[in-house]
Length: 102
Image (cartoon, rainbow, N blue to C red; front, top):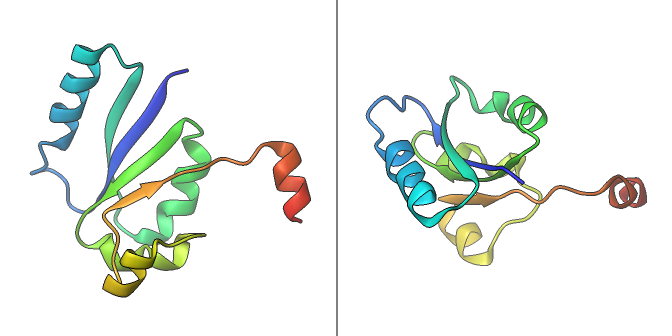
């Protein structure tokens, strides 16, 4: 299964992360892609998650390290103390799990 990982921030034109991670995926034979998600507003995050069902994780950079907190379902205790996150692990629920949470 092709997985997508990426960088969340704005602006991202200066970032070397995409080139760096995609070169590693290729070298290691990992079926994944690293994409820059340059969102003008953190409010676009829910739509991004819906539009990218293969998205498995995000690195977070300025200005969203703190602004993303209200969009997260769980927060590591260290991140909670710091009040910011660097990495988001995306866990997708199966239809059965989603129904149970209703």
